[in-house]
Image (tube, rainbow, N blue to C red):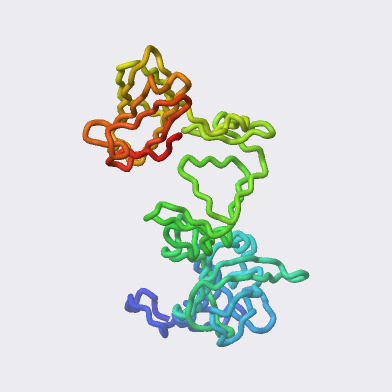
Length: 367
């Protein structure tokens, strides 16, 4: 046989190119094609590829490096449970690795037919009692083609970028808070955010076991509002039996029922003979008391245009009489009941006036 160095070098290896070698079982010289060597390396996993295992589909008994649970022409979408050996074609143990992948995704693809594949999430991986085989439960995500008996399949970890959201996959959509249907899988949303109204809309019940603080506005429009615990006011007081919750203008407080009765707090005005004053207070009731001898006192109303629809009451004690009179006077350019003034000239008398936005009108008066 000539020296190897005497043969020309061929840098392009073809499938049918051959090598001379020895068969291990009988030490007989054989020639081996490049194609056969490549298939041997692929099928038996002799070339290490991270996170990839090789198994053969065998519809009979599962031996080392084999799996079943599907049949020829079963589409990849139909596979939900496989029976798989504890070793792959390279005879390496795969139990610890597959157990770690529960909740993750894998790609099962036929060797030399990349368009035959299935993309799955592993939902569980459990030992079949009294065997060395395991049940691999799957949730189908996507794929193409069908299984074929005795073909070899690569099992590899796999996640496409469109399904990665910070390591979480699923059907969640923008502006939603979804429900997790697996360790890293999200499903239908129960809370949706509306950017226009800036509201969160919750489609299911909300249970809070810790503290809940709301600093914005609150609106309740359901069938009822149930409170089964002490209700505290702005001073963190729960009140006592019989008390009522009353507004302070800036918050609420627990008070006795008597303090929650509506009160009209008057402005006390002293009338004098020949005197005149203009009403500028915010009280809506005025109580007159006379001081001095006989005469007439003028009390000028604020403009009817200043606070439209305002109502003011006027009352007096026994000091007002026919000789000690109070005239409720409209400001210049306005009228009261069409005239310049309304006169109070009896003891324990009074009236109520109302602004229509232009003039004052007497809406109540004692006879």
